[in-house]
Length: 484
Image 1: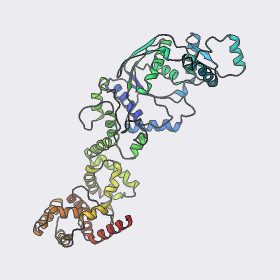
Image 2: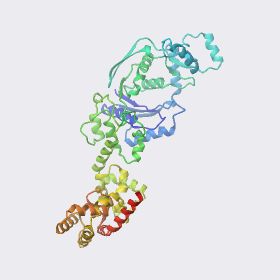
Image 3: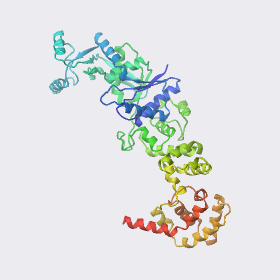
Image 4: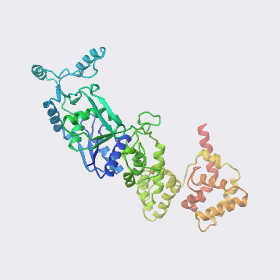
């Protein structure tokens, strides 16, 4: 019976590393017809927030990672953790500790020079009843510490292989703090036992926690689950992923115009490869996922790869699928017109199909669509300098405009045929006119096929912009002067 969980702490947003952990757990559950549980580990009252919890849940919903059980909030289970800590104390497997942090620090300083054990010295393990009563009467906060037994803790990590830790390197760790709140080790083990978790799949920053938790499973008389630890994602500089690399909220990627399926395909390639470079459906990813194919090497976050995947997905989608997404962006940019959903819908869909091939994100559509929607456009100064300063254009463009004016059908085929014929008659390369038209109609040196662009813009708008050669040159010259 496969039962896995994703257990984020709502002390921060759902970042890329956590999203990958969640996705791999989800893939594992779905590929084994298992159960995927969502648990919110919010026992850190000072740092946890309902807002962060909601942000995590929103992020998972955006990605389409549904859960079968939960969300379970640990903050609602505090009495259970206290009961379980008490149970271990009664069995002699844990003990009450009255030591203050200052006292522990002072005693540690004394033993460091002698090369003695670096951890907690078990000062409270053999306290007399009289001493306990005195500490209680003083109102001292009391924690519960686990009594670490002697011996080695061995387990086989499903990704990293066999791991062995000598318990002499583990101090008697705290289970219950002085304020009555559980530590991570206690709450996670109690909940994993309760949920009958069969595999704990998480980041390899938790490898050091695993021996402690295995000891707790054994103390509770429970069989430990299998463990698998994913290598942490690094930034392009091979350092820990941070905000400057893209270690931001998953919801920010949503707001920047990335699509859930592209993002999940991107996550899938972090320590695992589903196969060739393409966009896989969720069903395909589930069918291909195999834990034994997950690498233990640290993957590197590559924003350009994400952009490429997102652009690939956008180009594969139909206008029908893209239309509501583009509409939302157009509304945000104050470019939306209700006619685009009514009588102009065929034209709007045609524009989407034209622009989607070069759009890496949904947010790119409004800017790319601007030349089709406004009367006045801006011109890229470098593009003007490169493509509009040839004196031959002063004669060629008016002639070409007259040619276009006579066309009954302003279609891609007729536009291209007319342009190439004029270029041949004037003894110039068609590229001279193509580049000039792109700058005049779009304002940028790069665009989709200029013939498609002109057809979509229409004859009237195209001819009007072809007559603005001198204006484009003046604007470009003015821009150049401002930069000097």
